[in-house]
Amino acid sequence: MEYVNLKVSKNDMSNIIFKINEKIEIKTIKDLFFMSDYLPISNMNDDLRLQKMFDNANLVVSAWSENKLVGIARSLCDFSYCCYLSDICVNKEFRHLNIGKRLIEITREHAGKECKIILHSSEDALNFYDKIGMKRISEAFIIQRDY
Image (cartoon, rainbow, N blue to C red; front, side, top):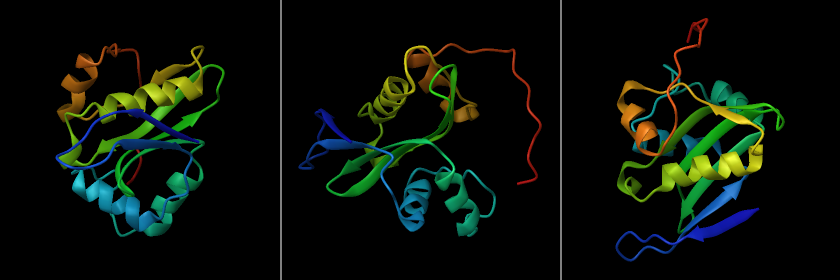
């Protein structure tokens, strides 16, 4: 499924296309992570772990410009109560085009209005989530992974 409903251009680039659950090579995802300064795991050479992260996600929204991956949102969702948006990133060159906001909107559309969207933010992204209207909560707990 594709969405072409965000009319943005970066100089002479064409529209951003959003895709749902598109199969994407891990190298392409890693390239985006590096271009976004987003490193979700400490060993970014662990392709098997990265592959498992995406193979086991059931809602992945990706943003493309001229066949180049420029943004991604990876979620685990039950489509009835909650959707955990685990990873979201946008290539630094494509920030300030509302791509991150649109990735979240499409995630919400597919999760369903009865689902709450939950995410754990980095310190650097807090202002972005405030700006797009997400509500901060303090009633959360974590058992940290071993990376």
